[in-house]
Amino acid sequence: MPDSLSLSQYVRRRNGVPMGASHSMRNMLSRAFGAKSFPVFWHYWNPIWSYYLSRNVMRPLSTFLPVPLAIFITFLVSGAVHDVAVSLVKWQTVIFFTPWFGLMGLIVITTSKTGITYEKFKWQTRAFINGLIICTSLGLTYMIESVYV
Image 1: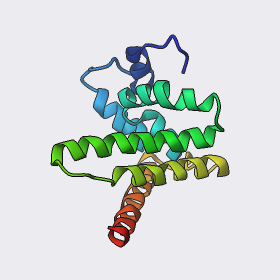
Image 2: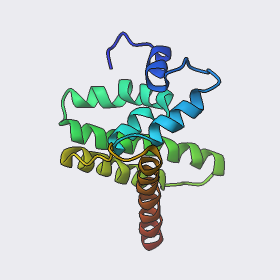
Image 3: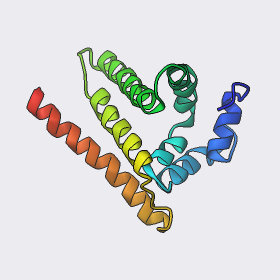
């Protein structure tokens, strides 16, 4: 992402419509779930959050760390921020999103390195695969949490 790209330009590039447009959410969901791979899913998912994570976490880390490690840490940071937000709402410590997002980060890195893609499938199949990856990683996180909590 170029430094000169504003948030509104970034969102328009990701969603195809201006930030806050009536079809912004629909476009994000359609583009994310219909993505040709799990790493591409994350290019479209929640562009406002992605903009800030990219600018403030991913890019600074990737100046001195290998990109896969910067990606993994960025997912962990995102998960940790989600955990803090939920902890503040519940008034109790929650550590769930950090391991879940870390697992998804590992999936992004692995599928990127191995070149796994499903671009030849129809949108519905790609959406199913992306949803299945998210649900499977969520289920694994619940299983891991039940063993350690």
